Length: 168
Image 1 (spheres, rainbow, N blue to C red):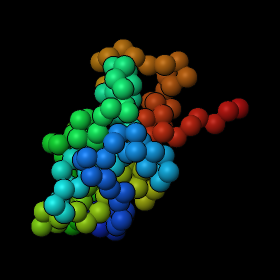
Image 2: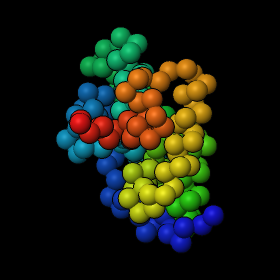
Image 3: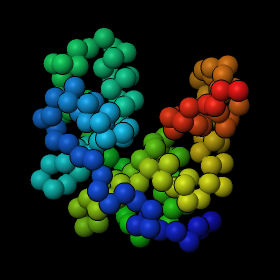
């Protein structure tokens, strides 16, 4: 299935970036100040890694580590999955689903040209939500961890994206 939209049509062209020597607390503050869930880590004009809010929560906070003593390089993911700007949005979403990620650096000739998130895709092609919901439903059935307020697949998906459930 092809959407007719290319990654380049939807991607953010000026992603928020950081260096790997940045103190982790400063990286978290940068995410908060710029309202993003992840930072691309740049070294020599190339993507050296990525750090997400989940990395901070699961890799630092949940383990009781002192974030004030850590740098981005201590927890960043260096095996970064990326996509080229010419690919179709459907291909990007499959790549995200299959790798259980929510964002993709967009790379052309080994240089960062943009950043694509699942939210960016769903703004343009909301019917593709079924692809992601299916993956999250399977993951949660396997782990058996489904909070009651997110017992239906759509609610769990929106929680994963950080979209708060409306109160009745």
